[in-house]
Image (cartoon, rainbow, N blue to C red; front, side, top):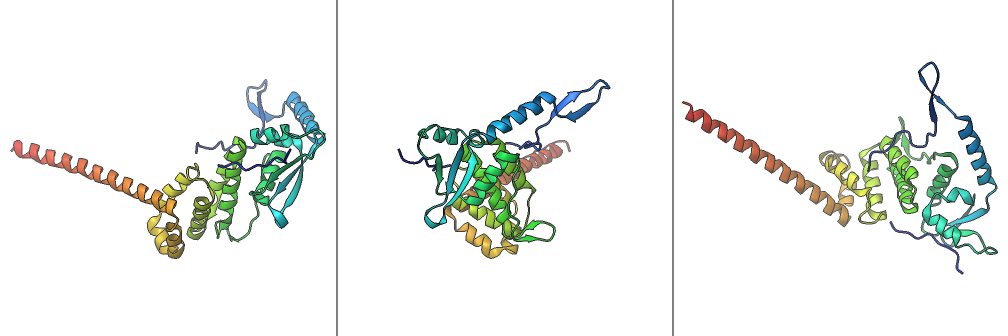
Length: 261
C-alpha cells in the first residue's frame, strides 16, 4: 500500500475567546470566578498522558530536496477527520507517515503548535515600528493557516486564524500583497476571498494613489478583477436606485405643495 498523502482542495463572526479553556463556577458568596475544576484538571492530565504515550507519526512536508520531516504524537492529529482517515489506513507493521507535498512547512508547524498548545505564533519578518505588516507577510501566513484549517476540518484553528488576520496592522502595499496571495493560491470559491474584495472595494481611491503599481498588478488577476467589477457595479446600482427614490419623493412633495397653493 502506498504512503498516505494529504492533497485536499480546498466568516462567521469569530469567538474572541478561542483557545481559552476555562471552567466558570458559582461560589457561595455569589460572584463568578475563573477557576479550574479539579475533575477537569485531572481529565486534562490524563488526556495529555494519552497524547505523550501515543505512537509517533512522521509528517513529510514538501517535495524532493525541500522535504522536511516533522515527528509528532499521533493523538494530536486525530481532531482532523482527514488525518484520522489516513492514520486508520496505516498498516500494523508499515511506516507511520503522512505526506504533505504541497504544504508550507511553517504553516504545518503553526498547525502542530496549535494542536499542542492551543495557540500559534508566526515569524515577524518585515514589520515596521508599531507592529505594522509592511509586505503582507503576516496576513499571508495567517491566511495559509486559515486555509489549511479549512482543508483539515479544524474549526477552532480556522477561527483563531480569522481573529489574528483582523488584528494585523497593515500598509496599502501589505494589504495588496495579501490579496494577491489569496487570489492566486486559494480555490475560486474560497470563503476568504469575498471579505477581501469587499474591503478593497471600499479603499479603491486610496489604493490607486498610494500603491498604484501593486494595485494595477493585482487587477491583472482575472478573478479579482471580476469580483471587483461586480462589487463596483452593485454599488452603482444601489446608488442609482437610492437617487431615484429620493428624487421621486422630492417630486411628490413639490406636487403637493403646488396643489395646496
